[in-house]
Every structure is written in C-alpha cells, then in structure tokens.
Image (cartoon, rainbow, N blue to C red; front, top):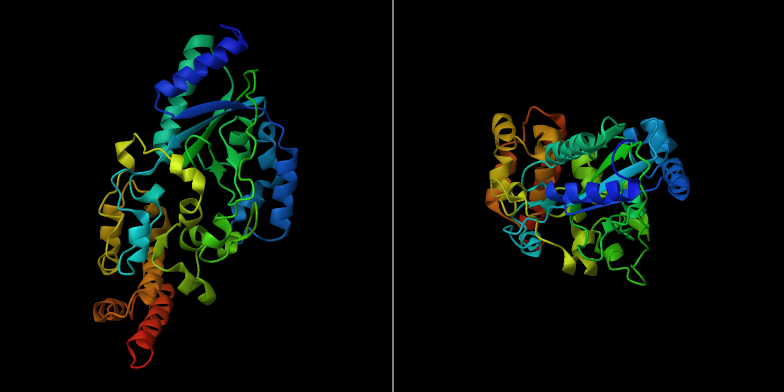
Length: 358
C-alpha cells in the first residue's frame, strides 16, 4: 500500500465518506464467529421462510474473505432515511382507510444512491494510494451487514434485530466496502437495550419470538415484500393497513427519540405514499404502477403483489361501501393471487357491514 500510514488513511477515509454525504462511517474487523453460529442455527430452524438467498451462501456470509478474496477489513457506512415531511406514522396507522408504507420506502430507492457514493469513496481512496482491492455492497450481496456495522462501532443489534445507534436511533441504511487495506479496526459497539422489551409486543404479528430472534415468516416486511405467494390467512388481519413493510418495532423503540431527519431530499414522500388512500392505490393499473413507482424500492414487488397487499388492507379497513366497490372491481382480476385476497377482503367487509356484527 502506497501513501499514508494506515491510521492516517483510516481518518482520511472517514472524512471522505462524510464529505460524500454518509452520516457515519466505521472500520470493522472480521470476527463474526458468534454471528455465524447464530445464522446457521436460524437457518436450520427454518425461520428464514422463503428467503432462499439466505441459504445460498450460508455461513460464507460471515466470512467476508470467502466472498471477496483478500478482504481484511470492511468499511461500514450508514445513511439516515427518516423523511421529515412525511405524515406522522401513528396517524397513518390509525387511519384504516389510508395505506401505510414503511418510511424507508416512501421516497426514492436508496440502493443506487448509496452504491454510487461507495464507489466514489473507493475512487477517492484509489486517487490517494493507488490501486487496491475492494468490493461494494448495498443490501444486495451475501453480507452480514448489521454485525459488521456493530464491529465498526456504528451501533448494536437490538432485540428487534435492527441496528441501533445511541445518537441516531435506527432509521438508517447500511452499506459496505470490503477491502484488502490493513486499516485499524474501530471498537465494536456494545448493547444498550437493557431490560427494555418494548419492541416485542409492538410487533403486530408476533414475529419477534424472543429477544434478538425474528421469525421472518411472520414479519410484515417479509409478507408484503419477500413472500411471492398467498399471505397466510391468520396473519392477514394483524397486518392492518400496512401494504409495504412495517415500522412498528422501531416506532416502539425509545432510542428513536434520537433519530435524525434525513438530509436527502430524495427520501421525502412521492405520490403521497405517506398517507395515500387505499382505494386510490388499488385502482392503479400495471402501467401506472410502473410509471409512478419508477425509482422506488416498491417497484421490485410488482403490480400483482402490490394489489395482493392492498386487498388485505382493504379487508381490514372500516366498513365502507366505497371499499367494497373497489374490491368488487377486481373480483375477476386476471391474477388468481389477487382474486383470492380480494375474496377474503370482501368476506371481511361483509361481516362488518352485516347488521349486528359491528
């Protein structure tokens, strides 16, 4: 390695990352043995559901050098996403006729933004020291991003399994730069959840089955984003009006009183997704879905699952003739998946509209 000493280079890298707009950066060592054991046990228990990509690399996720040979350190970054102009999340959740979208997804997709900035960081490092080995990851590769961020001192993994930062809560994205640079590693963060268990009962579907243990098969984020088929009937009512992701465990976390509003204007709500009416979103055609959600993380689930999710939310909505009319309009939808969820929703609405059923 040419150029400054590792200690000086580490300070330079952190300054460069901040200049590029990241809210915090740390350097992680690669000791993930305990995390690897937990990952293997979680996979063997089947708690990952249909997240087959988690199985594909298995324990290799905990061995960065097996993914990018030569890796000795990981530069971990975080970027706040909380949209300051979005409607109060509790108000939207309480409004059964409105759609709740996880606040990380109401604006533009973060993947490209963070990947471009990490690539720019790598380029700037290269300008200073010459060619070096690296690989960029942003939520798309076989990476244990939260344990690595913990090792980099960016926060601890909370009982809801999200990363928590003592100065910024948990509303942020993570990204990584695997590198062969022998940089000094930062001190790993230690846990500060204490005796608090606020996140466990906050989960609408009981997905946090124990502290630090998530059953993805019950998680609303999994059900609305990752699951390709039918949503289990017993989990539909607890989903309420959440049509893409869920923030409840984070909303309950007292550390999020320190959460920072994002400086990124691109994360602010688009198309009213912080409080849009369910019936309006349900009326979108496939072409409207593709056009309006261009550049949004939501677009990856496709129009069919979008309708599936909204149908469930409409079934959970207060008794309303307009809701029933919206559902009736898609009773004969071309998708069997949509038809199934519409039929369930119509039955749920019928029970509420029938005399004596409330």
